[in-house]
Amino acid sequence: MKYDVTVIGSGPGGYIAAIRCAQLGMKVAIIEKYNTLGGTCLNVGCIPSKALLDSSEHYHNAAHTFGEHGIELKDLKVNLKQMIDRKDQVVNQVTGGVDFLMKKNKIDVFHGLGSFIDKHTVKVTDSEGKESKVETDRVIIATGSKPASLPFIEIDKKRIITSTEALGLQEIPKHMIVIGGGVIGMELGSVYKRLGSEVSVVEFMDDIIPSMDKTMGKELKKSLKKSGFKFFLGHKVTEVSSTAKTVTVKAENKKGELVELKGDYCLVSIGRRPYTDGLNLENAGVKSDDRGRIEVDEHLRTNVDNIYAIGDVVKGAMLAHKAEEEGVFVAEAINGQKPHINYNLIPGVVYTWPEVAAVGYTEEQLKESGRAYKSGSFPYRALGRARASMDIDGLVKVLADKETDEILGVHMIGARTADMIAEAVVAMEFRASAEDISRMSHAHPTYTEAFKEACLAATDNRALNI
Image 1 (spheres, helix red, strand yellow):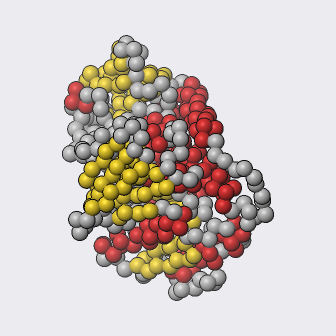
Image 2 (spheres, one colour):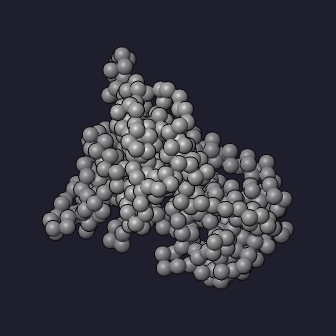
Image 3 (cartoon, rainbow, N blue to C red):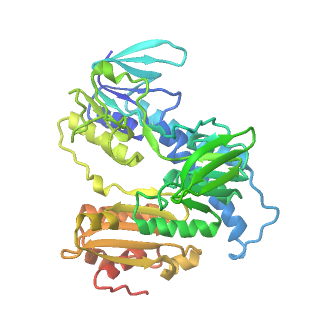
């Protein structure tokens, strides 16, 4: 059978692209290397990590804050096996949901490694080595990314691990050493810190979550240090070694002074790299850049006219929702529509507690560009809702154009900011001013009042509750 579109990869970008193509009347095939659909995000990324973050936060609150709420517990303990089992159940439910969506939309699913024979033919090799061919008019490459490492680090998946192994540990580490102060390291470090592990973070840059506004990194570091995190910022890792039960990480600071850390697990979380292994891009003539990313134009089309690429394998932030937007974009572009994506308004979130969420320009970017701006912020501790829930760490920061008052960036750290950031995205999509938000009624008491107050602060320092 010949298909109108074949999607290689079934992560959020791939399966959404397949569904939108099917909705638009195309005959669609999707190829997935592994036995379950959903890609990294649903299987060993976004979904399982959030499941463990929620479970560990429940335990942390039971151990540390329930007493103040007047809830008394005895013999509290962690059942890590049950925690991991629940995480696996959540993964099975969401990946099963993708299976259902493929059937509902009459999308043919092929399990196996997809590789190009030519630009219209993809070979599928299943786990037993059996081969089949898929003939297709167009191809969407959505193969995602995999954890990156350093050349001198050997990931043994036992003591020196990536995020994948960290989601299925059989014991709570005594001391987890995290290499990398980005989103993944902070989230998984938080899981095990809450469960009782000692956590040390080694980061080459001078800040954690360095891609976000510096205020967010400073506030998150302050909160995590309060919970017991140890940070070694501005340190370059020089050696990582392991034995059957221990790991040793050596790093040096900018003065050349050596630090040696010993633990029982080392989580390497220095980012991710595009995953195109085995695709045989050269058979189709598809070009990639020096960082392994597939080169695409503004329509996400590769240099080969019938092949597109989306998500983590192309330039831009490696975010599931960015991949989803690109999947819809390509499907609609193939159908002759004229979709658009405003990449500046794709939000980023760190699911620690407090959560960090942001959209638009950072203050550093505005300074670098020379754009005149004004800033307003409002602390969580001044919110009645935050006081009631004992979530007083955090703030909301709004950056607006100095002359027009248009909101240029919103940066939040605090309880439920992952959900709150959507209001900022909507506002910025409609090019709202800080004044617009400050004159909208926000329910009381809620965390979202902090956004309104930060907008008031950005407009002539008019915050009302501080």
